[in-house]
Length: 260
Ligand SMILES: Nc1ncnc2c1ncn2[C@@H]1O[C@H](COP(=O)(O)OP(=O)(O)OP(=O)(O)O)[C@@H](O)[C@H]1O
Ligand SMILES: [Mg+2]
Image (cartoon, rainbow, N blue to C red; front, side, top):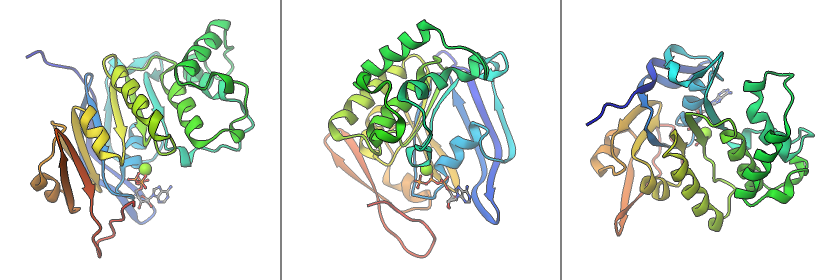
């Protein structure tokens, strides 16, 4: 077997907000050919984990990013934040949102070329929202915004793509297309996708990382019930055919909160 290259190493990484510890002593290796699904309950620390990697939150411990991900003084990482956290009141257009994915390359005052704009149009078309290019972001739906944010995350052709709950607002019919696109992208770059839609992600990802204050990596897209139970939150697996469906159960008393 050929050895794939490690691109990110987290050593004893902890993230705290005031008195609240969101992540504790996390150790995790990420490789160039990874396609990771991050799962875990609400408030478990999934977004904190990806923000730590992006350098967007303060952390203790060490995060080493390999030169393979560097281009000059910035990182070849495409990041799509959780949409609820994105400020949609900015008076900028969808096209400008996507172009801003090139900002770290161009520098703050860099000019966008005709080629850049053509690339934007091409990506928007792929996502089925080409007619929204000039529309201010305050006037698009959550799902349309998520499509634009995926364009923004990939326009600079990253080596690692990080998606934080990318399909929260996307309708069912586009969701499947969205995942198919992400699976296609995963052939060219490492992909980390945070999702509550466990059934869907486990069928496309190669590894699963469970995040619930502590972090466990499983080098398989199928988790046994025992593995899940060992990771703190009671989780039940329902199997439908060959696709393992995983459902987070409610449990009281330890601060875990779940959707649904
Ligand atoms: N900026 C912040 N200030 C204070 N506490 C925060 C902040 N961001 C997150 N937290 C807390 O840290 C914990 C982890 O939050 P995080 O957003 O990482 O969880 P998550 O797994 O992404 O949740 P969700 O599934 O709801 O997106 C939560 O208890 C949250 O309330
Ligand atoms: Mg989150």
